[in-house]
Amino acid sequence: MRGRAKGASERFQIGRYWLWYRKDRDDWNICWSEGRVTRRTSTGIGGGKPDSPPEQAREALAEHYASKKDVSAELPANGFKSPADVLLSDATILWLTQHVAHLSAPERYEESLKVWEQFWEYLESVRALPDPLTIASIGTTIRINDEAVTLVDAFVNWRKAQGTSAPSISRDLAALRGPINWAKREHRITWAPFIKDVKGKKRPKELEWSPEQIAVILDAALASPDRHHVHLFTIIMLSTHARAEATLELHAEQIRKGLIYFLRPGEDQTSKRRAIVPACPTLAPWLAGKTGKIIVYRVPTSAKTRANGGPEYFERPTDNISNAFAGTLIAAHAMRPDLGFAEQRNDDDGKPRWLPPRAKLGETKRRPNLRAIGTPNTLRHTIHTWHKRRGVPDAQINAAAGHSEEGTGANYTHLRPEYLQELIESTEAFWREVGRYTNAHLRYQRDTKVVSIARKGLTG
Image 1 (cartoon, rainbow, N blue to C red):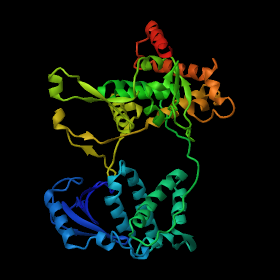
Image 2 (cartoon, rainbow, N blue to C red; image 1 turned 180 degrees about the vertical axis):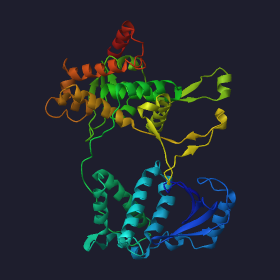
Image 3 (cartoon, rainbow, N blue to C red; image 1 turned 30 degrees about the vertical axis):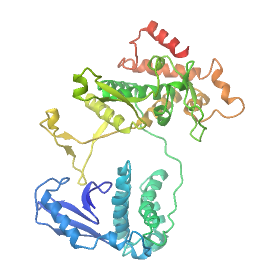
């Protein structure tokens, strides 16, 4: 297996061996793990970039790999071994390359794996790291400061001392559990040690956007046709307090007589309830006349299609908006760097990362490698906080958010004239505040007559 190992710090890796660039000597090293120790040997080859080794270094890695017994031979594909005989590092490498690399978002494990590396270093510093660190070691008891504690409990205590929330610790434990359970499922080991979970409520989300920030996000989304679906998605989320997945799945048939039924016909309610919400005056014109799936994105057609008089774009439905939303935030950051929509990524040495210039766009200078700050769910938190501050009754906020609407008669509350009235008034107040900075949320640019016509078309 040859190539870049996703989820493993984006390094070039074959089996258990990977390339590491030693900058002080301009030398590529071949590295591998032996228990808790990382071994390396020089290739004598320089050049390339830290994240892009030269072809000669890749060939040297391939020759080294071919000359050694690969870890896959030590962990047979269809033959059990005792977990006491399998190094955790070997199982993790196989899990990353044979399982995680094929997932839709392999990078989600990267941060947790880095945390575990820091924890192993901590255990080594207090002379409590099992040697060798095998899968079976995870279920053992170690001694830290003359106190006996299980290895997993030691990790949980260590993370709590850092102020880490329970959900984050749970995610880290899942990253440890992943390669072990995978090895068990793949018949690599005879049994897997139990790794407990940590329960606890999520901390209140702190990030929220001001109306001015929302205005810039909308402007950035409208600036590019391939992000227009982000613009509509943002308006729906803020106008309805809906969940992101419910908004992405919204179909025109779910909009009837001025109401949005986020629960699709024939679908059962789950613990994440889907509400019935009125389309507020700002949102209504954007939904008028819509058919089919509401959130669709534009894809440019080929030059040949356009030359023959075809459309410039065609539309595709989408069930994931994360990348497009992140791109919108980065575009908003370019428009208003002072509003904190993104930050530059750093490498392992804490130095800013840069991307090469894009020749196709005529760029001549490298550009910062940016990370968006915020997610689609930040929109939901933003409008929730806005309603709370304006004193909207909790019952209305919870009904729109899908946190209530239970009990006798709950299915008919949306038929009352006063249904969510204060929440709708608060929503319109939010849009008026956004209007101080942009009119991107207004489909007909404050033409109240046209808005009224569109409203009738939606509710008729």
